[in-house]
Image (cartoon, rainbow, N blue to C red; front, top):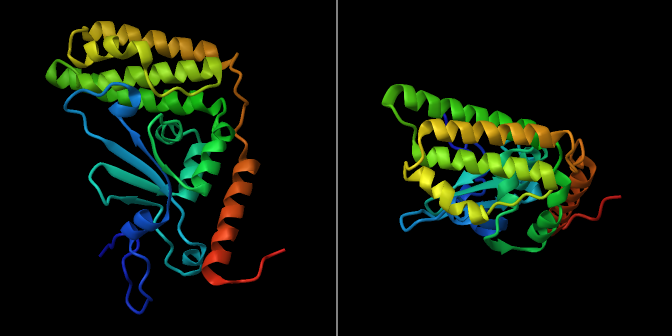
Length: 250
């Protein structure tokens, strides 16, 4: 039998319920998806993403706190801070874009410091991570075309947006989430007004431009692991002191 993260095990002390970690310990939250990308329409959902800091004493038990939690609202997903940072250091596209959302809903002191670290996570690793993700999504679209004669146009639109974001990040060193003046061309793809052949050509051009930008990118070869780790250790230590009253560590 499997149990959800944070569920009570026989003979164990009752842990903090996962949803209360989001309610009580969120350090950063934002809106993502079409609303953050500048591609929202009347029927668009509002996707909430966040980061919570599990109290340090929770890690002293055999049963660790969850690395992520869905809810409590619909379309809401949150990561524990350490998991979030680990994914960001690997240039996970969803995580990096979450850090750069123009629609920030909440930050506390830790969240503001996390946002101030955004540059430490960016490196040329984004080329491989974004390209790998984009390739996987393109294969799914091609499978749809083979089976149904057309792709899921909304997914095609978002893949084009991701490829634009990757190219521009490699060119400038700045991750911009909102599509700006590309909103209407991208929405035309979503409405099926651009042929699949035209979309494929567009995707291939963006991928080639990202590849060309990678060798001349102002981004460093690797992210700043030491700076991020120092941040994580400091916030874990502060949490331990707040929650246990233990004396400061050397």
